[in-house]
Amino acid sequence: MRTTRRATPLPIGILATVGVAFLAIPLLGLLLRTPWSRLPELLTSPVATEALRLSLICSLAATAIAVLVGVPLAWVLAQSRLPGTTAVRALVTLPLVLPPVVGGVALLLAFGRRGVVGQYLYDWFGVQLPFSTAGVILAEAFVAMPFLVITVEGALRSADPRYDEAAATLGAGRWTVLRRVTLPLIAPALIAGTVLAWARALGEFGATITFAGNLPGVTQTLPLAVYAALDTDRDAAIALSLVLLVASLAVLLLLRDRYLRASSS
Amino acid sequence: MSLTSTLHLSQGAFTLDLDLDVADGEVVGLLGPNGSGKSTTLRCLAGLTAPQQGRISIGGATVEDTADGIDLPPERRSVGFVFQDYLLFPHLSVLDNVAFGPRSRGLDRKSARERAQHWLDRLEIGELAGRRPRHLSGGQAQRVALARALVTDPDLLLLDEPLAALDAGTKASVRSLVRRHVADFSGAVVLVTHDPIDAMVLADRVVVLEDGRAIQSGTPAEVAQRPASDYVAQLVGLNMLRGSAREGVVALASGASVHVADRSIAGDVLVAIRPEAISVHRQRPEGSARNAWPGRVAALESRGDVVRIEVATDPPLAAIVTPGAVASLSLHEGADVWLSVKATDLDVYPA
Image (cartoon, rainbow over all chains, first blue to last red; front, side, top):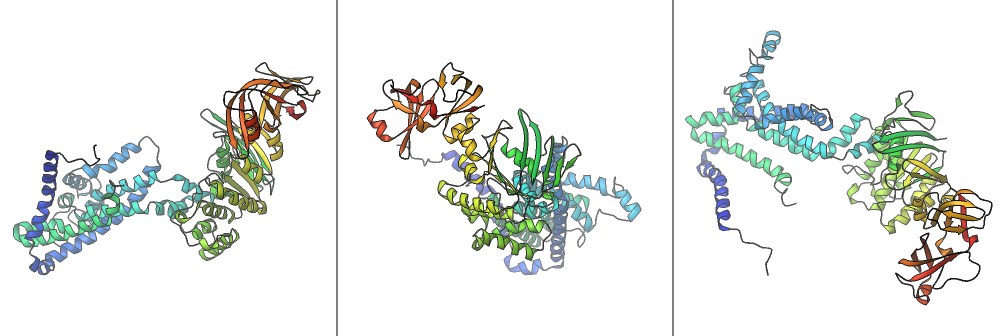
């Protein structure tokens, strides 16, 4: 009689083990080479604290921008049945797959001093985005927002519209329905999308260095500082990498119900 | 009139054409099969679906008039809606679910909650105020939904299959509770159901809807005794025949005929026969019964302490007999029988 438990074929087992090792060994390497005793000193150095501070400010600001415009965008995309919606959705999704450096170049051409929009910003308001902290925030928001939009739109589309109808029959106008029913009902997706966007903003490298450069104290966020330190102070680079790894693990823990258990349910 | 409405709406092959007026304090039951337009009617009245043509006035206020371009959104109509699966907001407590209406209509949080608590107490579920909807039983959720719909003091209360989601045991107690609170309600009530018992117990007047049209309107007793549609006849368990009457004989479409006591009625008629009035025999009956048909037992079904038998005759009929009769006549599926019914036991009325 056959049992439901079936042995894994050997080749598959070997390849799977290689796969796990391939993912685990680099992380293990990072942990093994971490100069644990020098960690406090490395993480409190002026370059490190500046990068930490900048990363925190820029990633939070970028996340705020993504939520502020991304949630309305997701709502419109979820509601709209206009023919152009698919094109807009594709546009919104593009930064997910676009090489970040291309995003940086595109931002430069749009918001640079000679850029399509940037020249007016400079001529009329004296605003110069490239190589500024604001430029970092812009670059991070550009790559991070799609994560939020996609997550929230998916939740809005699968939400039961009859709750909105029930709220309307109880006297709630559209704004009240949105505020008190629609958004609270998709809160888990909203939180997940926000955390994903934040994680993406925190790790942003390519678009940032292209558009905003690598100026310590102004545009040098954690990933950029790691990159810069790799040549000069390897231990500092490892210490800062560790910070980013811890942040990633924290995100994973926060979202574990959503992604890690998806297959078992 | 608390509700006056004229609705016309086409969705693909389906067309709804309905005039529905309901007085203050009156409960109208919309009875009909799935797809007959019951739910669409409620949605039109609530403002969730716009009719292509129509006029709706609720509590004296015109909320819909396609000729004048008036189409008030749901939140500006004085309507309470109890949805079939209640649609209690899962992220709010029972108290805040009920307070949602008053809050949305401008009451401050404290007053809204006081009002909500008052209604929960009235519906004898005051102690559930702090619970989340997912921790409620079906009967409790039904009461919360009713409280949520009544708390805003609407002019029109709409109940969509209010008891459909409940199990049989809960149904009876919730039905009596709904009956009590609906009777206390001073506005107009429209109740959608496909359960004749709900319609009979809860409604003052029943409107039978089929294919988007009202085919019968009357008190529950009238509709149950003299159904105008096969759908209702089946629901209430009556045999119903259609035919043309002339001098006491009703000619059926199949070619068979039925003798009735009323010799004056003529033209297209319906004949209702209670299954209890039909006698079952193994031989051709002798005596006074003028309507006798041979046939074969198609199905036997036990119904509590009686047995309902479906007999393939022309016309096909259902009879109700005692288990004793089943035994003494040794009835079984496929048995050849004769059915008879006295002309005086037939109810004949114009179609």
